[in-house]
Amino acid sequence: MRKFLKRSMLTAVASFSLVFAAACGSDSSSAPVNDGGQGDTPEETEVNYAERPSTVVIGTASQGGTYFIYGGGLATLLEREFGITANVEVTGGPVHNMQLVDGKQQDIGMITLGPGYEGYYGTGDWTDGKQLTDIRVAFPMYTTPFHWWSLKSSGVETLEDMNGKRVGVGPSGGTSGTYLPLIHEALGLEVTSVQAGASDMTSQQMDGQLDVIGFAAGIPISAVSEVEAQRDLNFFGIGGEQRDLVIEKYPFFYPFTIPAGTYNQLDEDLETIAQFNFGIVHKEMDPEFVYEFVKAYHENQDLLKTTHSSAEEAVAEAILFNDSLPLHPGAIRYYEEIGIDLPEGVYPPEYK
Image (cartoon, rainbow, N blue to C red; front, side, top):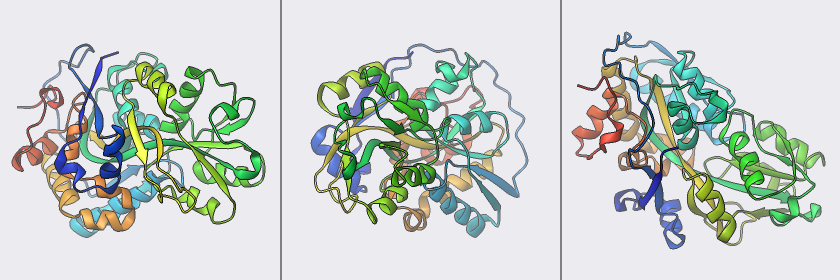
């Protein structure tokens, strides 16, 4: 796997994001980036671009998670600005979205950087060595922190307490379902992993079928807010040597702090790890449409923030959280137009 480096979050991004600002005190202002070392990339330089779409399919994740809510905001934007009908579909999450966009089964997908990298370069076990090289990054979204919660009545207060417990880890194709079992394994935790969507997991937890839920999504997660309105919760993350171990093994993670007050029952800052999220499209999507869509996306950030507060982080400069996956030429045109100096590694083979 390519070696990821870390660099400080751009001041321009931090100034627009409460979460980023709060995280600066604990090194969460560093983002994973790529040094452009290894990994085969496609040699094809000619692309047969599709016509401008009149309808689009947006791939999200499970209901109750942030992707599904965020997808509704994108659908509203597309309808209002372009008169385009958007169908927001429930999927397994980033892994599934990578596969669906690459296979032209959806038009816009949401991913975290880990599955994006592993899919594009074929390094993830879930790819069976197949490289999903037809995806292109179009726009940045927000930070996805990993965190865990239990009912206070369970007595589970730390990661170590999860040994021998039933732990909900999210859907199998999502960021949570993909990486939480790997995190647990890296830490030597013996847990029974249960894969399900956010809403289903919270119902199971309140019914006593799950001891703990671990999840990764833009914060606050609506499913968590629903549970804490009915039950007392323990929240825990990952810090210290445990965090260092996970980041060393999976370098597309970076340190992050979930600010106190993110949930009503979260009284203190919570140290954990995170990945950044991006919107992707197929490489054959019409460049003029992608340019106009990305432009409208950033110029209508207030609309997205009314959909979910995580869109506070969706500033144009956040596109620099990625320098290992190719951008769509239409997106490149917009970011260059507003003066962002893009890293060499994001220019696709077909870019002219």
